[in-house]
Amino acid sequence: MTDPIVTHYGPKAYDDHPPFRYPDYKSTVKRSPEMDMVHIVQTLSETSGPGPAWAEVAEEDADLTTNAGTGGEAIGERIIVTGRVLDENGEPLPGTLLEIWQANACGGYSHWRETAFPAPLDPNFLGVGQCITDEEGVYRFTTIKPGPYPWGNHPNAWRPAHIHFSLMGPAWGSRLVTQLYFQGDPLLPLDPIYNGVPAHSRERLIAAYDHDVTVENWALGWRWDIVLRGSAATPFEEDH
Ligand SMILES: [Fe+2]
Image 1: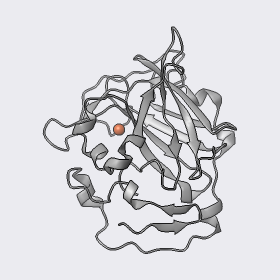
Image 2: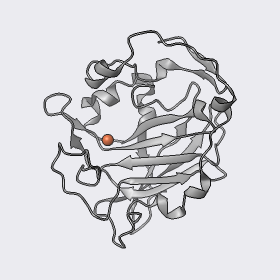
Image 3: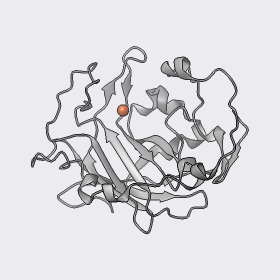
Image 4: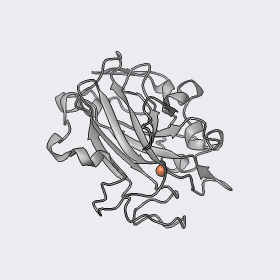
């Protein structure tokens, strides 16, 4: 999978992204394609749409500590996660929809299929949020630092703390689904999903602690820029 596929948004550098099949990440063996990909010429619908439903995104959606709508606040280490969304030329992308989902402070997901890990749920934490980038391409979430959780991939397997991100970008052709990790997490070198990302692009998934983002008496700040497409692209989380 080394030949770049040229799209409207420039070549997609497959060497920067995880392979479809990475045996240490067991489920990739079951779901990775066994035949060569077919190159389909993109049409207007892939290169110009669909665009986010801006009217559906409210300012309060970006604060996961309160967006459960219960009137209470989520429990855990309050953090701010912010950064810029850039295109392949380093230009900011305003009006880009970001959707995130994550475990709570105990490593539990508020989802009906979450049965494997007996983490307590927080009634004031849904673990989902969304926002739109501003004119400078900046996004900003307030949330709770997610806890690690076991996932059964191999003996004593634990996912590092992470936040799932989905970005639509200007069109389907710039779609990105990936995961943010936290600088200094000791579980990172042990994680097959993280290690499945090529070594040279792996660090693009790590948010850095930023004291300028930290708000006194309120929350610690983390900064993570995201690049859609191109040679500096933020890698996909796995299959791409
Ligand atoms: Fe997860």
